Image (cartoon, rainbow, N blue to C red):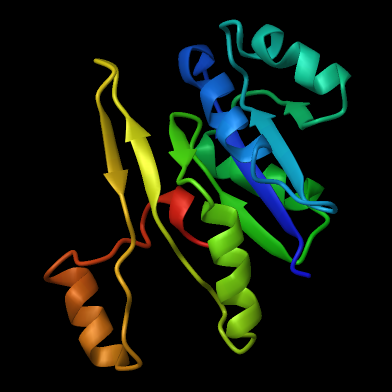
Length: 161
């Protein structure tokens, strides 16, 4: 079974972090881990997550602000699993997203990366679902579809395993 380390960097996302974390917790399997790297938040992020931290449901690391890349890198240092999944603190993983990515990784052990969709939530409460399209075995066509047609997205942190 493919074990996954989910890494969520956060900085002052108290309004969104619990929903983001919950979307992941509902999908974890034995051996998976959820790592939240708090990049120096000055809001209530830590307090909101306290019960999950105390219960051992998430790994929580607080650090001085280094930026989102520094927070992601710290998550990688902490992670103990073969597969990494990055999710932004204001995004939610699609329903059954980890299971679908896990299946794709198992079906394609030669792949360096598999990717799927995510849900973005905006300040006004609106949501946008980004479902992933199937790609072909034609790398040149995939590149064109990605760059020119924006037919699929691997740029968002919440899409790649």
